[in-house]
Image (cartoon, rainbow, N blue to C red; front, side):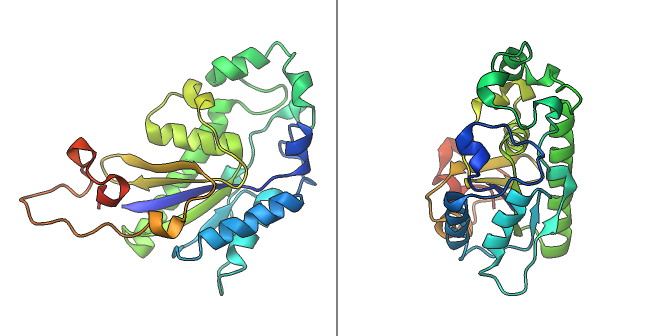
Length: 240
């Protein structure tokens, strides 16, 4: 049972200006975003990370660097499949203008049918991102064991697509999910199913949240990935 921490990059000037930054190369963390990244690093201090991967875009690399600045010897690995959705001609435009486009209602209601002008489809974005985290998760399990905890730094829509997959949601439902700047969402992957431990967390002590669950009492054969019937103690009594 491996654990993935999905971390959205910190705030940027494009976020505050209501601009769709997309893959614009020059977008970086603003003062608040740098502070947010430092705060995420502090929240993760007690969490042993086997690896950190990141989107190649600057705002994500800056966030990953802040997380690893307090860890000796660790460096982030760039994973191109975690890059922002290819918004094509929409890139760099104000959201208030894009909301007037004919494609906008489809983006909101049926994202699986969307291909951005001269850009990527949202199903392509979802497939590459989910495929990447599944492959990296298998790699962590093979190299570090089933209790490996690792992190991926990416973008709002990309993280929402990965969360939707973990929840068994169709991509058309992913707009129901919220992923704030510098938030952390946690997925535990098991052979049976993924478990969503938390989503869009911006304040919780992640060291406490990710404490190893207590060893189960002997009560007959228990599948390693079983969910506690009735809910049990929640995350502390989850699959282990």
